[in-house]
Image (tube, rainbow, N blue to C red; front, top):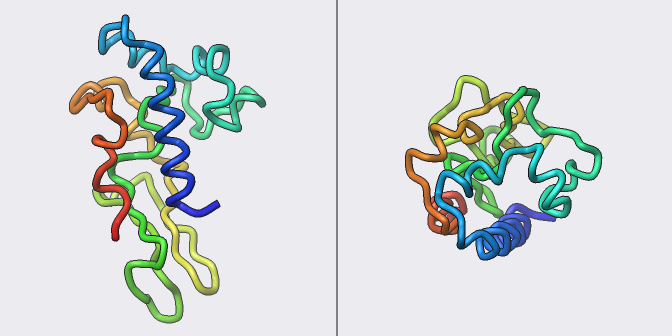
Length: 140
């Protein structure tokens, strides 16, 4: 699955959950997306939930911004670096992020970064419209 198809599918799953939570406050919606709650109530949101496994090694994980608003991707790549194509990167150059580099590709590796998974970060620019929050992620 490519970046674009995952992005679209994930955004639709996110919207379906938000549409069920219209009776909750913003803080309650954010709390709903805590990992432990999502594993129980939304097992199809993430393939790791079925294994009760987190994508980031941390005690507290909020999944509201699964897919970071600072991630940038372009299906056909941004540019060539030597013989490799840069397909994704971190717009804030998080010190906890890294790159996965293969023979012909460079992809952002966000596994070590917790920036979008903290409640304070989510609240900073909270929107119930996931695609609006993520509008700068895909590049054309």
